[in-house]
Length: 411
Length: 140
Image (cartoon, rainbow over all chains, first blue to last red):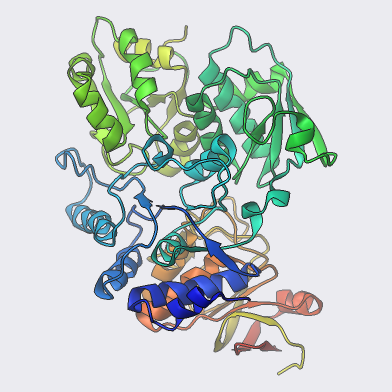
C-alpha cells in the first residue's frame, strides 16, 4: 500500500500518540480490504456511540488517554441515553453509567455532540461528490444515494480511526466506477393514491431483500419524493439487506436516467415489484392483527426531521393519545422545535420526545406488554426479532388514529 | 508446516481444534460476547461455542458493529484462537487488532489460499503461523 508523507508522519507518531494508534489500525484495515492508498475525508460520522460492552469504552478511552483529537468535522451517532433528559431511561443502572461515559468520551475527543443517526439533518450535511467516512447504515445509504457524497460502510472503531487521522481507505464506493447500478428494479404498482412513506418502506424492504449489497436503480417512483421518503426507503433497505447505495431514476443525483445510473452498462438483472409482492411485503411488516390493543406508538427511526414534525402537528387533534407515543429525534431538531413553540402541543397530545437516543436501541420506552405501532420500516423489521416486541406497521396517519384508539386502526 | 503460503491479515501463532462454519457469520447480533456462542438462529452452527477454537468461516457478514463484538469476546477469553477466512474481511481484522492493542490478546486472521480451502474445511486441528509477509498452516 502506498502511504503519503502525511500518512507516514501520523504513523511515526509525529502528530501524537492518538493519531499514531489510529493510523496503525487504519493501514492494516486498508491492506485487508485491498485499498491501494488513503485519501482525505471531509467528515466522519461515528457509529459507535451505543455501548456494546467494555471493549467499546476501552477503545475510546485509549484515545482520551493519548490526548487524541479528531482532525476533521466529526458527528456522533445516537447513543443509549437521552442526555437531555436522563430520567427517561428504563435500563440497568451500570449500563447507564457506561453508556453515558461512552457518549461523553467521544465528545471529549472533539466529536460534535449531535447524537443523531440522521447527521444529514444537521449543519454537517455533506455535499455532492464529497469523500466522507460515515458509519450507521441509514446515514451511509442516505449520504451516498440522496446526497451523492461518497462513503463505504464504515463501522465501530474504523470510523474513529478515520476521524483521528482525517484519512480514509480509497476503495469501493469512493470510486465513481463502483457506484453504477447492477440491478434494475421496476415498481409496477399504482402509486398515485398511495401514502408516499408506506410506498417507500415497502419498496425499500423488497430492495434490501433482493439486492443484498448490490446497487439497485429503482424505476417507477414519483420524482416528487421528499428526502424523508427516501430516508425511510434507505433505512429499511439497509436493514433488510446491506444496501449502501441506491439510485431512484429521475430523482437521485447520479440517476437522471437509467443509463446514467448504470453508467451505460446493462444491469446484471431486472426485477419487477408487482401488486401482489407489494401487498405481501406490506402485510408481513406487521406481526399482529388489525384491532390489536397497543402498548405504544413509536416514530422517528431514523430520527424525525423538522419537516416530519411540521406535517405531523396538524394531524394531532382531540382526543389526545390513549397510549404512550414516542418520537425519537436529534437535539438540533429538538432545539428548533423548542424555538418554534412546537414541544408543548406535542407533549399536550401525549408525545414523549426521545432526544440523543432511539426507542429501537436504548431502553427509553416505559415497560409494558403488547405490540408497538410504527411508521418506520427499519423499526418494524428489527423489533420482533431483536427486541422481542410485536409490531404493527402503518402510515403516519394510521399511527395517529391508532394512538388515539389504543389499538391498531387502518384507514 | 505445509509450504503453501496464505495471506496474513493479522499476524500471530495459534494451534487447536477447529470450529468450521459452513456459512458467513455476523458477529454483531450473531455472537454473544459473554459466552462466545453463535446466537444467530438462522446460522447452521447456531449454539456452537468458539472459545479456544481455530475458527474457519467463508466470510464475515452484516453489520459493521461486528468489530467491538469480536474485541469483547477476545477480552473475555471466550473468543477463537485464530480466524481462517476464504475472503478478506475488514470488520474481523479491526476487532482482532483492537483487542490486541487494548488487551494483548492474540487472534491471527488469515485468508486461506484457494487450493487449501477444501482441506481446511475438513480439518479437525490446525496450527497457524502468521507472519507479516505470509502465513503457513499445518492441517491435522
